[in-house]
Length: 238
Image (tube, rainbow, N blue to C red; front, top):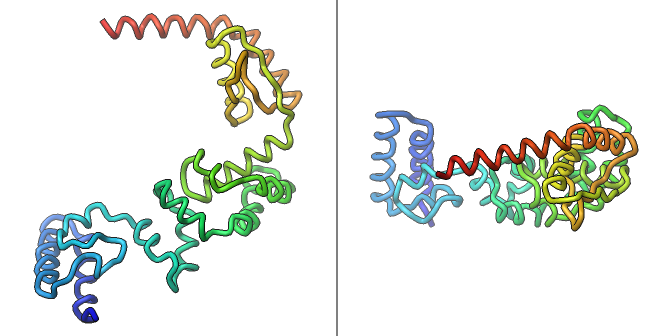
């Protein structure tokens, strides 16, 4: 069994190292290394999110999120989950592991009222909860940010899909196809899907009319801008 006093002292020195600057940090690192060697401890013994090593420099790559992930499955799981769902730096591997223990439906139910409030449509909360039933754990990997941010974006996307008809917008060439995709993103906040002969997107009647007007007004300008960009790119290569 590891000596509790030695563990406690090592954790205190580790905190001093993490929070120190300049000479204070250097001194704390020296004392921590000496303490690890004297008591035959590793950083893992002090914090299970750290590697099995006495190399103090490993602390420079420490992430709070990784430390919290190490507590999943333990008695502190409920407490750390509330922090992990808002952690912005989880890797996809960590996210998938987190999704194994998070109840997405409960999280959606908890956050839906806030999402509706910030969207300016308080009455949409129940619609968001219904749209959330179509969100899968795997689909969240296509978004970025924390789990809560990914879930919000995925739910809003599904809600948009359910409330806006799907339309196929024809494009005469690849340049116009990308121009249309840009218009869709600007008008709806959601990505269009590039398909053969055009783009597929969800737009209501007003958005479709606005897109057609912008397309007619600015298509020639978009083509000229693309040609100019291609010429300038070629010049930079010489």
